[in-house]
Image (cartoon, rainbow, N blue to C red; front, side, top):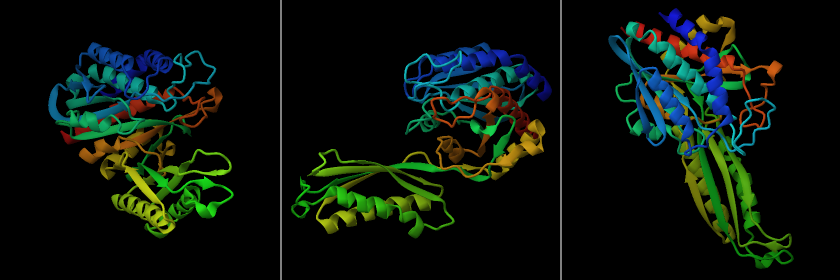
Length: 393
């Protein structure tokens, strides 16, 4: 039956490419998706599935019930785009000014629709069910995953899988990872209020620029001296805003940046020490500060058993030589919420191909990937469904 499902998704590959390119030409930003979820819902209904819309906001879910009783596998794809101007020279270049699919979510969507079609053709032979989760707003905190989960998308689900295409991994390759795979991502903002003055008389001012500079230097030391070296942590100040004239010391400056961690312990230590560094620097100089720390997505921590299932299945599909362990990634992904609720795993599918200039990094104006990744991700999902349901039966 799996071979039949493979044949079905291969037969509609050109249709899936058309869907991907249509989505690429008409991208929609996070929390503004309307056309995209409507296309997804219509396609899934045509596959004969039980479809729910506006799940958690703008999400779409569809349940495929197998012909035999069993467990339920959830498969997730995201569908939002980014506020980036598309600079590629391709027929399917974005037609929406300042918006483009620069992260591959159109690939994810097309692939999962193909899986729904293929599995609908063999559903009578499935020992269980498949829940298709098409998620909105992955790119912008608070994201769409938690809202969809709160709205019940994981109800009765036993395991969940997700995939992401990568433009820095050659097409035809698959990457898996046990345990921690992607980092938690938080935001901090430090507002420093001093006393403004003239640049020629700094002794009469309380210079928030000087204080802010000390804070920037000192928070860089937190990861090195306050957090276990075996627990990867990145703390980066990314903006320093103190609008003023070249010879005027401002009253106030604002620092902001990001924190990337894997463990909750490191996350809590980072927040605690950022607050401490800022407050001590300000109090010793006679200034005051406000520290705003916003928790973003938690880290993606894969279930080891499911990650190794991905490894084994990947070797069957693309060959052992084309499957590798993913390095830890400091980028964040709200798939993390799904694997906090259910066993599951996230994996990567290669999309790089220099022959078609699919070589640019994610979030780059010329980002693109090889569309063969649609099929490879689709076959991985199909195999995961059969493997999990058959072995659980």
